[in-house]
Image 1 (cartoon, one colour):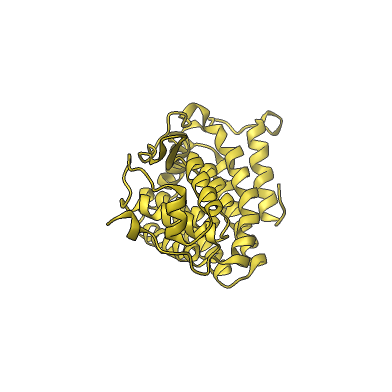
Image 2: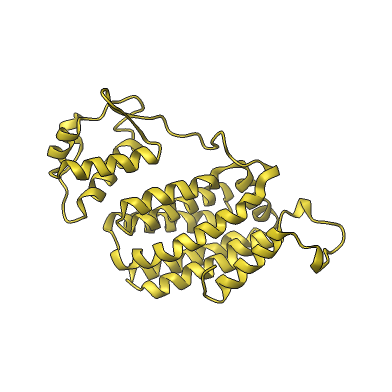
Length: 274
């Protein structure tokens, strides 16, 4: 397949989002391989039937996501897929970073869910439903690894459903640490000890997808609150079972991260922002 037939002109979707979706799809599907040089901006604009500014914005998002490398004077090249665990990934010793990450995701996704329900980008909504189905299947098969992958796909698709390229880029960066060793260790510990957590998560994600698909912004926000109240915050609050003290910790001896986890759970459960 040549570059001339690889991309289709933009239809009704916002032009920059169509360009971003098509380029990302070509890279992820292997139609564009690491090291391949993309056509020049002018040529891409002609293929997509958009202005060069739309192409330039889409390329900027892909560059921030680590999918392409824009080399001035040489061209734009596809980069190898990032490793599952990046060099700066958290280790078991710094797993407390999981708390501020979860707080950031919670605050971010409250707004994203509302906008997704208002915009309902067709491509993003299809990806959201596909991720929800994969998540449901993984949960009922008790496949923690597949569940983690589907969960990440779901939250990225939620951002894509807003139709906002900037939010998609932020979501990609915000969720990347979930593939780190520290985050996986925390999650896997609870999935192993309390496998019902995966089954609890499936209907919570389904409620969020349903609210978005039904164009119900307030219901989508409530679904985000329920998700973080019933899944993320309890996981943070309880900590790693392997690290539990022999005797109960006295209230005055609680660590700051324990207090923040309780605050996060309380805020989500009461339907307010942290």
